[in-house]
Length: 194
Image 1 (tube, helix red, strand yellow):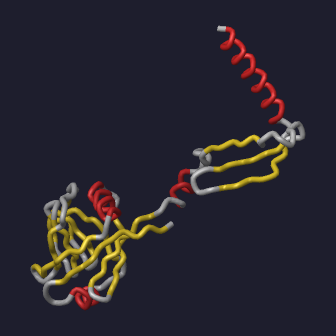
Image 2 (cartoon, one colour):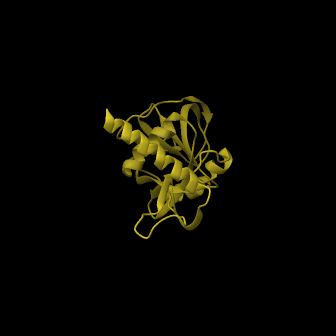
């Protein structure tokens, strides 16, 4: 019981000293890292043998949400076909999120086959959640079909699909040049940018 009282008294004295010292601190050194901020300050009351007070904390969460979103890494789908690499902007749906999660673990190599003279289609090694809606595809659309197949469209088609991504500013001819007239092996992975 007496030791508990002494501990409380000592903690109260230390707290009072720290509060008193805080008002007189002059920062001498600041170090920032990606995940936390550490500030070391020395006060005139410190002795040569005393360690400086260190405070550690995460960056402020009171930042402007738009500014915070601007510094978040953005995933981009990379698709390698032959000697070409295409970059596609991912959709904002649970299918694309699951696709990003899978590809973030490791890239995937897929065998795609021509179908209907408007797409290359092939099986995924895993199923993804579906967010099907009626879509008219365009060249560059990367589509989830039936939850476990992926298609890269080089022409138009209307059906109930889930769009995963869109290769920007690509023509039918550019896609066909890279994908070829028959079967094609493609490699897909996620690249992160800020």
